Image 1 (cartoon, rainbow, N blue to C red):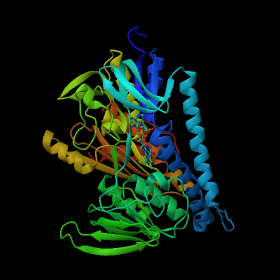
Image 2: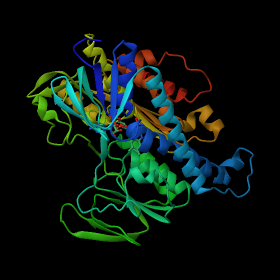
Image 3: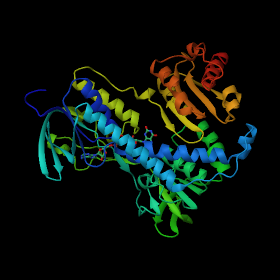
Image 4: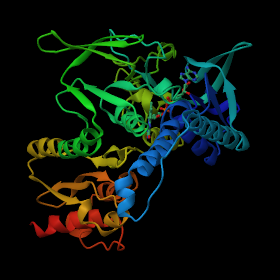
Length: 477
Ligand code: FAD
C-alpha cells in the first residue's frame, strides 16, 4: 500500500461490477475497500439475475410437468401437478441470502474492507462515506464507481409496489395475480411472462415499439412470438404507449397511440409489471468534486479503459464500470469492466470487447445472442462496403433436441460474405444461453464460417445446431 493513502483502491457499490473489481484487485495485491449503501451483491444478486432465475427454475418445472402431451411422448404420465407459491418465493429468497452471504464472506476472507454507507467522491483520490455513526473521509490511490441502475418508470405510471410494480417487487412473488399486464417486451418482461404463464396467470403484453422484443434479431423475435407468446395465449398491444397506470383493484391502464396521441384502449387488470428499462443510479455521487458530470441520461462517461471522462479527458485515478456507465447493462459486462479498470490502474492496458459479450433471456426455451442482428450487420456492411449473408439451422433437425422432446427453435448465423467472418449469432432453443459461448469465442477471435464448418462437434449434442449452420454457410457459397 502506498503510504500516502488509506487504500490502493476504494470501490463505491458492491454489485456484480464492484465485486468483480474487488476480487481482481486483491489478486493484483491492492489493498481494497468496498462501500455499499444497501445490500451486498447489488441488483443482480438481490433483485435481478439470481431471484429471477430461481423463479424461472421452479415455474419452468411446473410448466414441463403440466405438459402432459410432451411427457406422454417420452413415455411418462404424471398425475395433477401442484405447487406452493410461498415455497417457490422462499426458494428464491433463500438462494439470494446464500449467494449474498457467500459473496460477502469471500470478500472478507480475501481481506477486502466492507464499509456500509453512502459513498461519494469528495475530491481527487478522496471519498466520503455517510454511515450511521456520521461521515468519514477515506483516501485512495484509485476509485471505482460501480453504483448500478434502478428501474425506469415512464411518466404517468404510478408504482404502489403491490398492484403496480417493477421487477424489484416482482422477484418477491408476493402473490399470483389472475391477470397481469406487462409493460415492455425486453428480456425482463419476457422472463416474468414465462414465470407467470407457467404458474397459471393470464398475461397482456404492452410494447411501445412496432415489434415485440425489439432488441432481438427480427427472425428470432418472430419465432419467439410463435413459441413463447401465441401458444400461451398472451394478449399483445404493440406500437402503443401506456400513458397512465393507476394502481388499485382493478389496475387501470390507459393505452395511447404515440402518433395520433389518442387513447386507443383502457385495460383493467389485477396487476401490472412495469419493465420499461433501467436508468443509472448516479445521483449525489459527488462527480462535480473532480469536475466531472454525468451525460444527459445520467450515465457516467468513460473511455475504453473505463476511466471517467471530464470534457473528453480522463480524470486521473477515477474509474467507472457496470450499469452506471450504460455500455451494456448486464452482470457479466459489469464484472469484465471491473477487471479491465483494475488492469488499467495497474498499468496494463486492457479494454472490454463488447462485440463478443453474449446476452440471454432465460425463458423456456431460452434466447441468446452475441454480436450484431441482421439489420445492424447490413447497416455496417453498407458503411464499410461488404455484403452480409445469413444462415439458419433449426432445432427440429438436431438429434439431441429431438431426443429431449424439445425441438422448437432456431440458430441463425450472420457473417461477411467476402471473408466469412462471423458478425452475429442468435439462438432460440433449449440451453441457448450455454450454447452461445462457442459463438462468442468465434466473434472474439474473428473466426470465419469457412473454418468453423470444419470444427468437429460431439454427436449427439445441441451444439450441432451451430455446426449445421456453419456448414450450411459454406455450402451456400
Ligand atoms: P448493481 O448490481 O446495480 O449494483 C450497484 C450497487 O451500488 C447497489 O448495491 C447499490 O446499492 C450500490 N450503490 C449505489 N449508489 C451507491 C452509493 N452512492 N454508495 C454506496 N453504494 C451505492 N444481467 C445478466 O447478466 N443476466 C441476467 O440474467 C440478468 N437478469 C436480470 C433480471 C432482472 C429482474 C434485473 C432487474 C436485472 C437483471 N440483470 C441480468 C442485469 C444485472 O442485474 C445488472 O446488469 C447488474 O446488476 C449490474 O451490476 P452493477 O455492479 O453495475 O450494479
